Length: 324
Image (cartoon, rainbow, N blue to C red; front, side, top):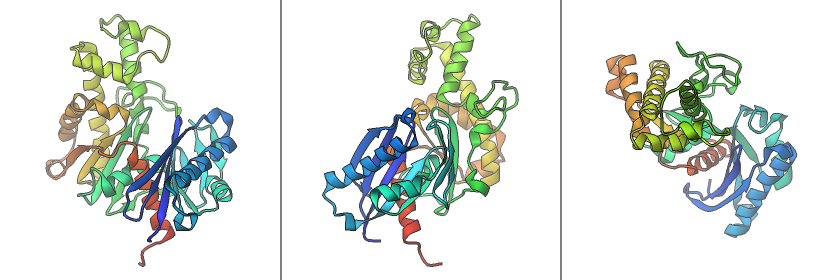
């Protein structure tokens, strides 16, 4: 389809937008604070404002825009364009596609933000040379998506990919979902911070002790990564445990899906080998050798652009589907 598409990535902190040309290139960008406390209507107005800013900046005529693709966190009814629930946006049963279309006057397709991120990586990023792409994002939480030969696996009620909510043996921390011991209680920014804080409070020495005992928010995943680089043993131990557990969790997905690549993205993944080395070791020990022999583990390449590219590509496919 020889038209432009607007790609939107709605996060708990920021709304990011990109105008994508017919060749998949981002030609204009815009961003706005989400400020979810203002309510769904205001946030939707801000999303529409990002789209309007993209048009204004680029000078592209509205008639040249085929539509909008938006990646949104939470549980999404992709067929009806409704956000059924999104905890960090405080949304429930919000008809996002319909409201955006009313405000902007363009067709709107919505999908889960992590699937759009992984889809973007699969078609233009670290997964572009692979057919069976498993991607995960590690940030505030942990989520996964699987792209099989260009098709996005969604499952019943579009709930596929909640890797972070597999209870892990030996873990007892209560998860925000209500269960105990979920993988994301360890493998996430919050999980790293919790592990360090609990260890410091139990008396473990660490250069992170002062930060860990201050007000919540003082200790960050970046600070833990820096402490590791400075030789802090507690930080190193936390990364080893986190990586080992992630490898065990990924083993379930690899055995079920048999991907040829795992792409790891999100803020926590910027820690690099301090996290990925124990992931590889644990994963290799937890799967059959035939799985491991054809499996690559890569870090994401596109950064925040992945969600914009993925959302736009999804919308393009929905609005101009290829013949069966």
